[in-house]
Image (cartoon, rainbow, N blue to C red; front, side, top):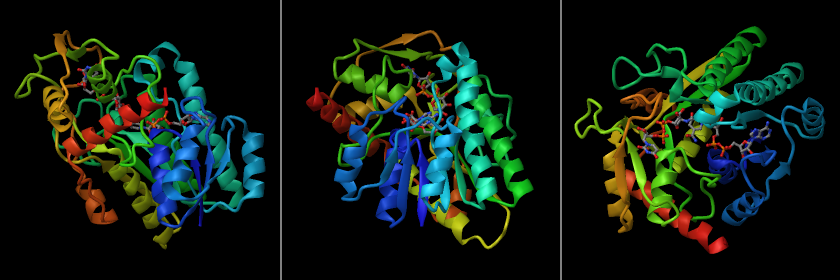
Length: 338
Ligand code: NAD
Ligand code: WQD
């Protein structure tokens, strides 16, 4: 079967392409390189020994998508392509709505007319906001997202539910918690662009001496050590969940399917725990200072991922330390390229 992977040269997309190829799917990638670089394609080829088809265009250009779908028989799609920076989405919200939703609707319009099903959507734990109870399962009520980015995920989910219902399609909405780490080959990982907002890239760059000190945003949260708690999931485990979710859709005999899965480890870690785990795993020190809370941050979020285990036969089993080791190896690789 041939799977269209949009954003397939991005962080999570590139790892998922590797897992798809390892599972004998053919892959067609569309990525406009707005947040990636061409060498990632070379590295996918090096890691897998296979060459996925690659198109470097912007999915907002429907006519190019039409040409691609005329040229390839596609059996499903994993749609990673989106802008993803929460803070930036508050500054340029229209660009976020335009990129994340127009791209999605273009693909769905084509799938509608071409009788293609099996669509996987990258959603996010951000759709839950600060949930009232932990852990967060798939029935936890959604709260209005705080950021325009988060709203594009909520809207994307609604669009896909309507798409599946009206046109009898099979869709899977995957709500990722906090993806971290890099490929064990150290050839794929998250590309650093500008000053990182997310915790792990900031920790890594601080350990590497690129940043002077990590700012820990708040130590007065109602948690055991006062720092905020998240569910950090290793990116290769996350990539494997996509293959499992895709196989489930393909094998499901129903005409209409709307699957929703939380993808996390089920375990929460505080910011200080992450910093110390990074130091222990890599035998490096991470200088930090405690600062005021970051606006918009929630106190705690971790998943109940039992549904994915039961229905997909999938579980995130890589330890935090192991994931943080791969992050550090990826950092060494990036430095060796400069
Ligand atoms: P990423 O930025 O590394 O990957 C996205 C890729 O899509 C990039 O390579 C970019 O060049 C490409 N792209 C963006 N817009 C495009 C367009 N219009 N046409 C073609 N290509 C386009 O991001 P990621 O971390 O791999 O995230 C993948 C998906 O998962 C996104 O939808 C993101 O919102 C979602 N997600 C990410 C996280 C996270 O923390 N990384 C958490 C939850 C959900
Ligand atoms: C984690 C913790 C920070 C940086 C974001 C998006 C979410 C999802 C995942 C896409 C928080 C603290 C961070 C720093 C710190 N992405 N921190 N110093 O905010 O949980 O989630 O990424 O869908 O939608 O909102 O992740 O990595 O930014 O922060 O103390 O320099 O680390 O306050 O408690 P977050 P994060």
